Image (cartoon, rainbow, N blue to C red; front, side, top):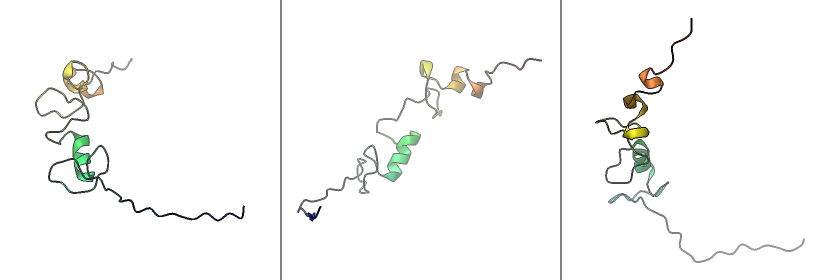
Length: 89
């Protein structure tokens, strides 16, 4: 246990990844994007890049699509459309 461990420093370069959006020089955070572009990607607002998930096919709706390419609200199911059963009296 008397062995001394020495730290060796290599002359290797640390390559810092950059954002995959053209003309963006900020450092990489996740999924190939910087913090700003990653947030846009998560909200489905990043133009020209693969979306996180498929969006509702109704115009101006940015919700996640389920069956038939529509969100719960436009498909007429779920709590968003009031599809709950009435309370028993």
